[in-house]
Length: 187
Image: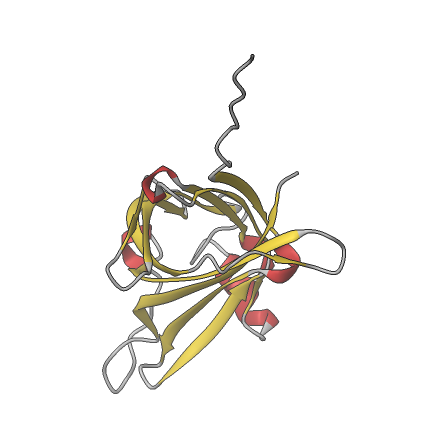
């Protein structure tokens, strides 16, 4: 008689960001009267998700600065210049989680170093998701997350500004960041 054991189902899965269905959006005050919104479409990265032990989960992401789009090519060119992102010298924004926790309301807090313009600072994203997995029409398994945070752009060396005649400045310091990410399960 031989004993047979069955392995426990895998709780850790690996996922890759689908750049066609993902973007990083931002919002910042313009002239102190309205918000300008923009997005980066060149988002890549990987999620290692442990559904039974959330703190073991990890995410890494990279954003291609050249993919910035604010619906104004002149502004996009200026944002890629040394006045802001200096895309030639610092072509990517990167994030790598160092801590993942679940709040009482079910949202995740994903913290880690964010690098922009050659400066790295610790940030925390509030994350909704991941969604329950779904199969797409081609047989791939997908999940989605929405993540958000706020940063002070000056802390990342993005200090360009111009004073306004009536007071205030041309570009606000606080930047709201929202990530809409769709992941495909790795084979």
